[in-house]
Image (cartoon, rainbow, N blue to C red; front, side, top):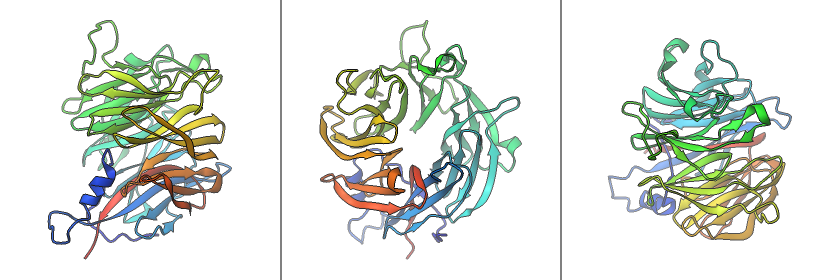
Length: 391
């Protein structure tokens, strides 16, 4: 168990200019406006037979690892806010557990994500606006929960909801797969799959909501369509925001079986909600990267994505988010990769599931910074936390 010895934590959310921003946190010692930080990666892990899971915590000071923190189900992801970890139990768990980074073995609370008469809500992510307000997306239900992370009972946990059923098809579920909180607005990414017809991808959307009153923002002039942004890619699964260009980048994988290559990387300009395909995944006859099912953005000229060729056969590529130019030489290939993230020191972290560890890529020259950090179990999802350094 890691004892972080701290009173205040701030989650590191790296949206753009990572390397430059972090250098700014490490300049002259006499600059009293900068608080030195110690950084940690928090990673959900799972047994190879999916019988159980845990949480690994890696220090970025010496890359030491604590692989035994909070065991439970295998299908889990992590959300963070300040000093808290939110372990989200997804399929067949339907719960969210609050942990403190001070002692991640001890449960603060655990609440079901199913409301009255609901089941299989399959929670995916929590974003926290402030100490008493968060937004919990539930992949198996159209209603986003507005929650109080300080609640002392399940009855007081849910304080409101946002109904996204306008974006659902006949199955009444829009498949909300990701959410971003940017300033005073929420952005919900919806796949809109047809569960009654083999999970065929329908029209994907990005909807926008004001957090001041939880009302939806009109992004188009078509009164007969939902207010949200119609996307070109199908079956989107992840968003990244770059503040320097005020752009959200979205990876879309399209249908897996059979693949029709209707995905890629789509950019959404928040200034006017216009969209553009930055990286096309090709077509049935020519798809050099496979299907694109994950991405990470460093800055306006360097980003990364995961190309999916087959089950447990993926590769990592570098690309320019402004021009869409892709370096066709894979940085890693023939690997089972579930997540990639830019870390607080500007490096790219990759879940190397084949070898039950994390591979770190130096984004300056795309060389291997750390070939493998052992996570004991198979790594699944990565988040980061920064801790003020003690004297």
